[in-house]
Image (cartoon, rainbow, N blue to C red; front, side):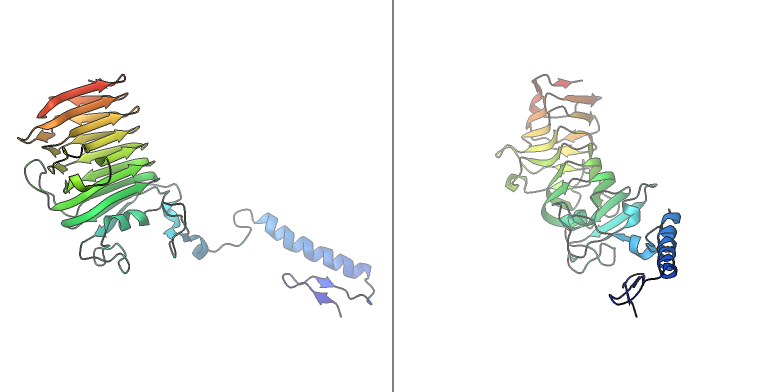
Length: 300
């Protein structure tokens, strides 16, 4: 009796067996049947199931796959954007939370890290009021957009503290729209970075309804820094800052006249190097040096 291959059951005659032409033709017909079925089914030749494509492993910001991390296939397939919410609270938990309102994450960074590097959706990280002693890092996102904001109606940052306090935000190498809203930046003199908000080599970064009232003069920290990036700053409040806006290396930034400045002078208002800043209306800043341009920088 012949042995059989384990996968599709093709006969393998033993050394003392005689192989007939009929047996040979039967073997060829079986191979033709199996291969022909595979070739004819061009839509799904490997028989992949819906369950198998429902969850796709994705790498983290460091290029490594996090243990157990999966995302739905509709996060990475090009289709119409869907708004998705991730909730954060100082009472949440990064280990047991799932980002829902009922089980929020504890840190903004955790919410950022679960967003797929490649996605086509509008993610909103909605944060409960409180202090978040974080220097948030957004790295290498492609497609869709990401917003970080207060969960619920935020007060005007130009008139009141927002109650949503964060140390700093850095977006780096992101080919998507990123918006930072409603944050009252605090303890700015202690941050490890050279700026409170920075967009570097990123497609577009918007700053809205944020409050920069923590003194940055002593340590020379920029409030909003665009580095080879595009973006806009509006409806925000500044006072006692080293430099309210810094733009360099080919950045293009819109500065709105609905920004406001408090009574304590900043050192510099707009500082522009090899970049363009478009002013909409009056500058509305209170600074020792309102505007400075170097290396071909322009302020219009």
